Image (tube, rainbow, N blue to C red; front, side):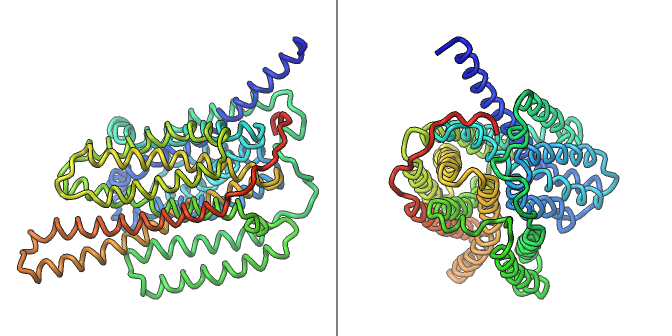
Length: 496
C-alpha cells in the first residue's frame, strides 16, 4: 500500500471513531437526565409543588422522547441523519439553557417537552450514525463504545447528581450538561469537514423520494402519549377510573389509525415491513421484554434495601452505581464480542443472564448482606450492557442502510415502553401481593408491625420471579433471530 493510501485509510479510521465519540457524547449528555429524579424533592420545594404535580416533570419528558423516537429516526432516514442529530443537539442545548432559568413550574414542564424533542433525535439517530460510519464487521465494537458512554452518564448521574444539587442548586443539573453538548457539536464540525455532500447529510436515500409521513408521526405520538399518561395516572387515580380508561382506549384507537396510515404512506414513519424481518422482530421483542423485567430493579429494589435491610442512601447509591458501572464496562466488550461471534447467540446469552439475575434477586431475604445484593446486580448490569450492544449490532447488520434511523428509533421505543410497562405492571403486582401476604399474616395472629417486613419480602420475591419470567420470555424470543451467517459487505463505508 502506498504512503498516500495508508494516510487515507488512517484518516478514514480516525474520522469513524470521531463519529463514535460525537454520538457517545450526545448519549452521555442524555443519560445525565437521571439526575432529575434526584432533584425532584429540591425542585418541589423551590416551586412549592406536591408529588402529583412534580411528576409531570418526568411525564412530559418521557412521553415526548418516547413518542417521537421512531419519527425522529424516520426523519433522519428521510432528511439526513447528521442534519437531525445536529438539530437534536441544538434543541437539547436550548432546552437545558432555558430550564436552568425557568421562572415557574409550568415553564419548566413545557421546556421539558422541548428537551424531549431534542433527546428523541439524539437517542434515535445517534446509533444509526455509528452503524453507517463503520463496516458491518466493526459495528458491534463501535456501538458498544457509544453505548458504554451512555451507561457512564447514568453512573455519574447516580453518584454526582446529589453533590451537584447540594453545591449549586437544581438548575446546575441542566446547565451542567451544556459543555458536553457543545463538545459534541464541535466534533460534528471535525467529522464533516471536507466530507462530500452526501456524507454531510448522513443518508443513503434519495431525498426527493416521497413526502415525510406527518400523519403517521402525529398518530404515533398521540397513541404513545395516551398510553404513557394513562399508565401513569392509573397509579394515582386507579386503573378503573374514567380518565384512565378513556386514555387507554384512545391509545388503542389511535394505534389502529396509525397502522392504517403506515400501510398507505409513501415514506412511512415506521415501515411495518421491518417487523416482517425475523431478526428485527426478535431483537425488538427481546429488548422490550428484557427491559420490562430488568427495570424492576430500579423502582422496587431501593425500597427493599432501605426498608427491609435498613441501609441508607449511600449504600443504595453504591449498589445502583455498581449496576450502571457493570453496564458501562460490558457494553463495549459485548459489542466487540458481537463482531467476532454470532451476535444472535450473544443476544440469547445476555437475555438469559438478565433472567438469571432477576431470579437470583428473588432469593434474597431480610438478612441479606450488601455483597449478596451486589452480586446479582453486577450480573444484571453486565447482561444489560451486553444485550443492548449485541441486539443493535444484530439489527444494524440485517436492516438496509436506508432504514437504519427507523430501526434505531423503533428499538428505542421498545426499550422505553418496556420501562413504562415495568413500572405499571410490577408496581401493581407488588402492591396486590403485599396486601395478600399482610392479610394472611394478620390472620395468623401477627401484629401489623410484625407482619410488615415479611409481607414485603414475600411480595418482593414474587415480583422478581415474575420479572424473571418476562425476561426469560425475551430470551426465548431471541431464538427466532438465529439464522445462517449473513454475508455482509466489507467495503469501507466512509462517513455517512
